[in-house]
Structure formats: structure tokens, C-alpha cells
Image (cartoon, rainbow, N blue to C red):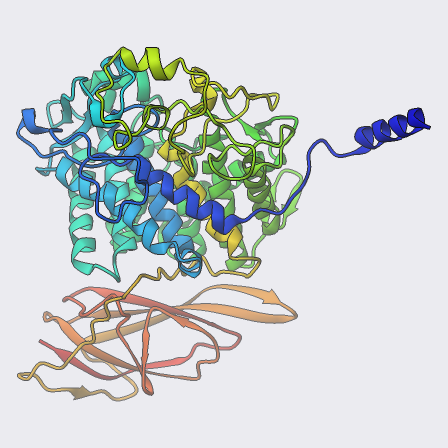
Length: 623
């Protein structure tokens, strides 16, 4: 009988799936992911610091160069501040908030996410003291990697390295411009003055990157061994232009993408990876979004080529392209043994947003095998997130602190050495290796939310501190992940990601008021005054047997004065509208706009299943 039971048990094991499939708490994973950024903070820690085993560090950064470079993030398990991956981290955190801020707010994490972005952008403002000067690294990997010390005990060299017109770095300046531009959108409603400051820095950094071209690691040579810019800088220039257009609606950057798409590789490179070095797939995804929004104009043929490359990337991730990404037997996207998770989260984020872009425009993905429903992209992203949270052959969560089986010996100086608050005794450079690095015990400090490098091509993983390829975490692993987790936690609702709304705590709404020295001018229904209104249908689709139309309306101030107040009358409107604020029976400026300068335009859109609405000026104030 015992033999029969054993045989039956063995049969069940053979027939069972290779790993268990369990539902995951995406809200908890999101909360923990954001905690990791607090563990990576450099500088003076704030009073609301939640990772309490950390303390102030790097308080003399920049002093020898006559500049304040206190703050920012340590990139991974070391104590160096590398500018390129830090900027990419901030760009991806910002993109996550721009797309899924509403879902973050619903789970109470939007404030923490915005704080994480601001910790990075506050540092970038310091690192950009002049229009054509950007500090791109503090410390160097060689001296840092020789030591194993808490950030609070650092005795390593903290030299600051910069780029300038004589020593250019278009990739570094371009990525930092992208980060500042994306972050300016995040803070547009909650902190307009800060948002404007970030956008000003982004404009200057883009001009610097474009005018003085060169690879940053040819100027900051100490970065070559750690964050070499293999892809060059053309992808960062296009990436920065895309974010500046998204942040400003300035046609110059849209034209830049159109004029340079072919020559800079935006329409030429078919990618199977996206990360801190190679941005092409991200550029292609953003430009495809602009195309689907009806913003391409005469650049539509070029933008369609960008979109073809974006869709090639998506198809390759699904395994339905001409050159598909490699996956482990357990189904994880695999690019390389060293910190593979960075490519998993970045690719999964692009799949997530593109799924929502397609759904918003009622389109399918076009792959070699035929049309693919957008839901398949979201399912792919979910499968990758579920894998890293524990649905894998080892039943291991690769997020520290999530689940019951996660890495205990992380390749991370701060977490592997007793907290300075518990034992303030100085940890020496080499002494840290002897006492703490070589220890086989679990980390004394839990690095909650850290996403480690992950398994190899065969789903194997060794939880050992010296196995830096698999057990070292990085900020750019987590940055795209927060957006996916927020989206998955939000459920299966359809989000119109072509017209994202970025909620913010305590939004500042500026209501236009008539100046006491000006008079309000009524307008006839048919208007030919200083304010022009142009409408056009940008796309249409059929749903449930009914044809829907998307109309774009551009209102332009043709006068030589500032338009300080505007009320539009809109009749025959039978669907949702975006880009205006309802005020009684009329519509006014959106909450983020207080006036319209001479010659400038604003755009709003609406969707319904009939001919265009009647839009006219009810009254306005010029001053």
C-alpha cells in the first residue's frame, strides 16, 4: 500500500506544472518597491525617512570642486553616484507616474513615488550649475569596489566628474534632459514653479547635448568599466526630444524627431532590449503614441516607421516577431546573466503602456503571425512580474522582503553591514570585506523592495553575496516596475493612456480672473477675432457596430497680447472631453494653464459618434 501511495505521489509530481501559480499582492509589491529607493538615498536623509537603518552619507560630495553635489542616489550595491543610470531611473519613475499615477494614488503610494522622483531631480538641479556644465559622477568604481563599507563610513575618493563643451557627453546630458522633462510633467499640477524649473533645465541640457556632441564616457573615462555608453548618444538625443515634446508641446521637438528619425536610427534599429544604455525602443514607443494621438502632422510617414519598429519590439517580446527575445524554460525574458532583471522590467513596462495605447486607439498589434490583441501584451508583462514575485521553477521571489522565499545575502554594502545606528564602530575599507562581505549569514538589514539581478538562462540562482551578477539590485530595475505594479493592481479597467491624467496630492488650480483694467469682450457664435479655432478629425474606429470619431481642436491666441481668460461655448457635444475645465455652462483653461501667451495655442480633444461639436468663443480677456 505504501508503495502505491509513493507511486501515486510521484505521478502527481510528474503531472504537476513546473511551478505553482499564485495570485500576487501587487499593491504590497508596489509599496515595497518604492521603499528600496529610500535605502539608496545619498546625502542628508529627511525626517520622514522610512528605511531607518540608513543615515546621512556623502555630505562632502562636490566640495572639492566648489559645487554642492550632496544628495542623489547610489545606483546599486556600491557607493558611487553614476549620472547616466540615475537619470534613466528618474525618467522611468516619472513615466510610470505619468501613465499610472491615478492607480498609485488609489493605493496610497503616489506621494512616495513623487518623493522618489524629486530626490533625483533635486540632485540634478545641483549637478547642472551652468547651461553647458553637468556633473555626471561622484566617486569612482575602481576605488569604491576595492572597499566594502557602509555609505556612512566611506573613506573612498569622492572626486566629482563633469562634462562641458570641451569634454562633451550628449548621452548623459540627453538622458538628464529627458529625466527633467518627464519629471516636469509629474509636478505640473502639485508644484508648478518646480515643474517650470525642471523644464528650463531640460531645455538647456538638450541644447547642450545637441550642440556639443560626444560620448560621455570619452570625457568621464572612469565610467567606462561600469556604465559604458555602447549605443552612443543618438538614441538619447531622440529620447530627450520626445520627452521635451511631451512636456512642452513645442513643435520644435516634434520636428526634431521627424527630421532626425532616419539619420539617428530611430526608424532604423529593430530592438530586442531597452535599458539605461539603449533607448531606441522607448523612443519608438513614445513616437508611436504621438502618431496615435494625431500629432504627427506632415511627419506621419516617418512616425509610422518609428511605430513599425516599436511593434517589432513588442512582437519579439511576445515571441511573434522575426527576431524574438530569448526566454528561460520558466518563461522569463533573458538578455544576459549580469543583472538580467533590468531588461525584464524595462521591456515589460513598454509592453504595458503600448497595450494601453493600442486599446485607447482601438487598434491591434501587427506581428508577422498576424494581428495580436493588446491584452496579450499586458498578459506578457503580468507573466514577467509574476515570475519575479515567485511564480517560477524555484518558487523564489526576486524582490527582497516580498513572499516567504527571497534572497537573504544581497550584494549590497549597506544591507550586508550592521547599521551604524546599531553599532557605530567604524567599518574600514578592507575590514568590511573580512567581517561582512565574506559572512554566510543573512543580511543584518532588510533591503526591502530591492529587485536583484535574478536567475540565469536556465532559471538557476545562487543566493550568495559574492554572486554580484545575480544578487546585486539596482535602482533602474525598480523604476519601470513601479508603473507595471500600479497598472496590474488597478485591475482590468480600460485606461485612455493617449490622454493620461496625472493626479497629484493637493493640486494647485489657478483660476483666471479678469484684470481690473481690461474688459470682457463677448463673441458672436461665428468668430473671426484674435482667437482662432481649428477643428479636425484625427482618427475613427468601430465598436459594437457604432463608429466613433476623435476630434482635435486647437485654440490659438493670434493677438500680440497675453490671453488671461477664455470661456468657450461648446454645443452638440455627446462624449468625453479632455484638455479643458468645465465652468458652469462653458469651458475654460485646463487647470495647469493660467494664460495663453501671444501666438501660442492650446489643444483639447473629444470623442463622440457624430459630426464635430459647435465650438465658439463666449468671452475672453486680453492683457
